Image 1 (cartoon, rainbow, N blue to C red):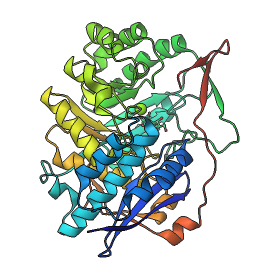
Image 2 (tube, rainbow, N blue to C red; image 1 turned 60 degrees about the vertical axis):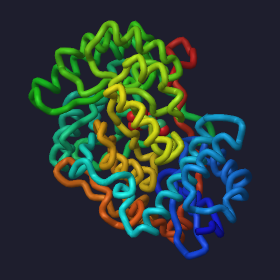
Image 3 (cartoon, rainbow, N blue to C red; image 1 turned 180 degrees about the vertical axis):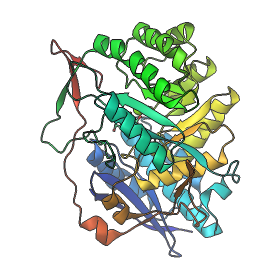
Length: 407
Ligand code: GCO
Ligand code: MG
């Protein structure tokens, strides 16, 4: 199974995606997602300039060896660009291996441990009535777990709040197609005063059973996060995500000492090593990495197996900046690992699904990758060609005095 070609497709059906396609001499092809929101072309260049020339002629069946060759062979370890590039190669090779076996990928990973992956959707609103409408719309669509984000009085645009909700399809994408990043204003104390009341109202309206999640998006100090975790305890959250900036692993120890609200972190991580202290110290409950950013199926499996030893579960990252290819890879892992927790799910735009032909299903709140051989996703090159790349940036956050803050 020699690799004869590898090509990188950049397309922008609603938002930018970077996809690697690897083809073997016997005509099999596999896809991998290499999308890094706001920095897409860096991964494209890494792949085209430095990885594709190494792939041609290699044995497509040597998945682990290729992973190690690209990881150790580069000498320079980790980092989002490198690990997204390795992820794309790794995922494409798993896709090929599963197609060659005539099996859905989850079968090669050990077979299904469950009938489907419990998914959480993103409900949001600028105020409570809008939020309640959004939660109802998600429940009607079948979601059995819901992330809750709202506007904060006195602040303008806030992370995670869709511009239009209330019955409308939710298509929140923070990366704006502007020459410079949009700047948003932030005030953590205003946020902390507001959020507990939101969860009190949601519990009063929707009852105690519905799993509720919340994303702090790295904006709090450890002691502020500890305070929020404690204040949210009566509302029994499924998790509080990214309470503090991710690179400070020890910060989670302080939060943990103060609250029993479950903690999730890791969407900006790209290696199992980023979790070493978090996992061995049992400082978190869920790992949030994306298959796309953490070295692919191989990197993610390694991380989830390590987490599982410490009773920590998965919560694989799945916003719309993970392409349908990255999403499919996540779903196969969700079925195959024992320590599955929950799967994030934002529905891709209709245009995205014209380019990426998916086969996964969403039924009764559970996602399933389908039983198609491989990942179960195909890329329509002609449709992709109709949506050329457009520069887009994630916002930059500033405090009221102008200081740049974590976004
Ligand atoms: C999430 C994330 C995303 C990120 C996005 C940035 O929990 O889904 O926080 O919404 O903001 O991936 O590109
Ligand atoms: Mg998040």
